[in-house]
Length: 337
Image (cartoon, rainbow, N blue to C red):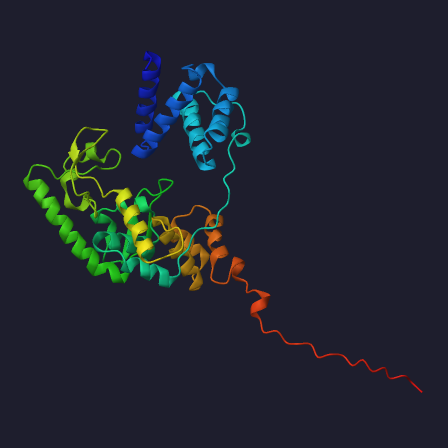
């Protein structure tokens, strides 16, 4: 790696951390920055512009055959590089080169199918999937839940720093009160053992760790679903216990759907889709569902009206209405005398 390129990558990383981007976004943006520079034979981004950006995006779409969402992610990383890191605003409209994402209807399970998948799950994976469906959580929101985010008194789950860096409150299913108390007892035993061994630290958001240096070991900040093993924080080098793996839950749900013989592609996000659709089927106001899901625009929530039980827009097919045969008309002509 050339000296300028190494310096630039360090600059991108430092800017992402200063802006409090997530670790996954940091890794993604750095990788796209590297690929963009390598594609143009290590030319410095200051020496490139619209033509080079379009060439790289065309390469991804045509040669690599990536999805539109992947192509747009690469563009977002490049825009961040120019606008935020290099402070060089792009002087051309981005919409002209942004890939159009195809509109797909979400996969939704029936209530019976949800029950079948849950019956094929056990332990913490069953509880986590129940939270996805019962509260409409995203996968990352479920994994990042901390002890303090469960409000047993108000029957609410607080989602901190969700998509768009927004907090929100969602439903706390009554059926999960006792299972979650049991899970918290299990988690507390793990935490106490970590403390006894000189560990017990957890990652804290943004600058809280500097402001409250002892908070990382406090019980209320621990993840509800901790990882089974300690690991080194890649940003700080500190030994911590992170939350459970997203891959493990994804794999458990996929295997459960196969065991239940569900003929649909089932992912953790499928349960969020099902949560919204079933609430609308039950007559809940779409604005309420929008708030529970944390959608910024109600248009995003409107997509679930297309997958209700009665088809698009909840309209019944004319074939499902009773058909009344039309009585035959008389063929006899009555001529006047």
